[in-house]
Amino acid sequence: MSNLQKLKAKALENDDVRMEYDALEEEFAFISQLLKMRTQAGLTQEEVAARMGTKKSNISRLEKGNTSPSIKTVQKYARACGFAVTLNFHTV
Image (tube, rainbow, N blue to C red; front, side):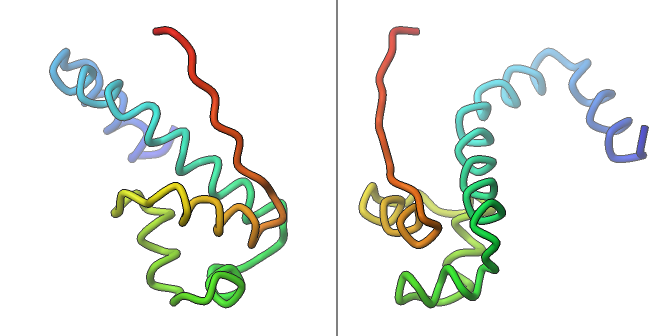
């Protein structure tokens, strides 16, 4: 187990930290999906940016979760990677 993994495990022992971390689960899953699409497409951030008509820095922010993208932006990203967006809703 790496030092980072040990630190994360220790931090998550705190109930408040665990609650905040769990609240971010959907965001983490979204970011993970973006990275999977780009990796499966075999593209760099620069290549995705060129296909979208934007800058690499915008792709970097999107993939780090440092922005709240519009559905249109997510659709453009997906298309640039050879994917389509499908939205589903379910009860919680």
